[in-house]
Length: 155
Image (tube, rainbow, N blue to C red; front, side, top):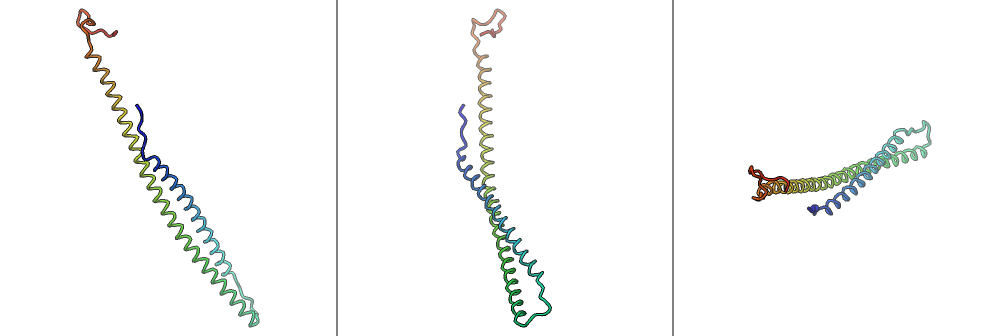
């Protein structure tokens, strides 16, 4: 008996490929978010560790304050970028989850298809065995019967 193929197999393979691509994108986005967070933390740590010397000329003081303000702006921008990267990573992870759910749905459909095929094959085999058993009992020829009325099993 020829087994029927799962007609949605190409779709399932496409969904698996999409899921793998989404998983790769999620991993890359998570790595980018972690890197952005590390850079922002480095900026913030460097800014917090900055100490002004006690004696500065007025020009040096203005320059130092301008440098600290620029560093604070850079740290703030880095933190904003880290937050945006984390949000983007979450969106990409959600996309991966959706792709995995679509794939899982098709995989369950394929499993049900195979279970139905197996049940049909089992039922066909059982019918064939039943036909053999019931067919033999109905094919007793009068010449095959022994004198005591029993059917011969050699035929």
